[in-house]
Image 1 (tube, rainbow, N blue to C red):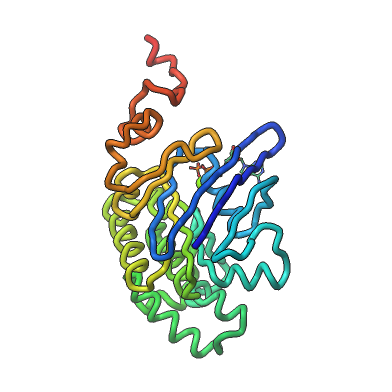
Image 2: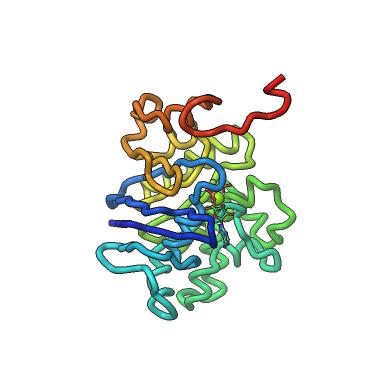
Length: 256
Ligand SMILES: Nc1ncnc2c1ncn2[C@@H]1O[C@H](COP(=O)(O)OP(=O)(O)OP(=O)(O)O)[C@@H](O)[C@H]1O
Ligand SMILES: [Mg+2]
């Protein structure tokens, strides 16, 4: 469904993506693992067109995504729903308008219909109707993530992108979010890419996992093989070892 080939992006001397190749089948749940700053968010932003890659191709069902602008971009992005790393809710809009942002923006529903539909989406992510009218800034981080998730799925997209859906949440809320993502993929028949550095979450959410390291996909395979991939980079990362191919800066205390 989605095919990425040779995706390259630098910011000045910072060569973040050095030729990413990835493919995802329809209905599949792919997790991209990688350390902080490895380019996970940049990859998703290239898919959404928020960042223009230097080279490479991205196709959705064979249709090119790179370099699309204006109406073509907006039509394409209606096929994709994204949960942003920091939820990125609009603080000046009540929860229900955040959830129904895309359908309202593209004039697909009246405000009355939207408010009603929002309640349904909120229930689906485990939130009560009572919060529909309040501003997102008043809510806890876990609730904000759920609202972000509701917004991503309310547009009923074919492809869902989740950027660090569980980061910063306590373990129980994190597990619930993982379960919600899993059920969303199954119930809606959607295809999903989730980025995370949380190994447990990756194993719960993914059918397949790809490891991003030094701007390339170092390993990819079934999520079931993640803990015994046989790849030294993946191995060090998933088992949290301080020694291995991934350099870990020594701290003064560690040397003593
Ligand atoms: N708009 C930008 N301009 C300049 N540099 C950027 C920009 N966006 C990202 N970068 C750089 O690209 C690198 C990768 O950033 P990215 O946000 O993709 O990391 P990440 O893998 O998502 O990390 P994290 O797990 O911390 O979210 C970082 O070094 C970052 O500073
Ligand atoms: Mg990120």
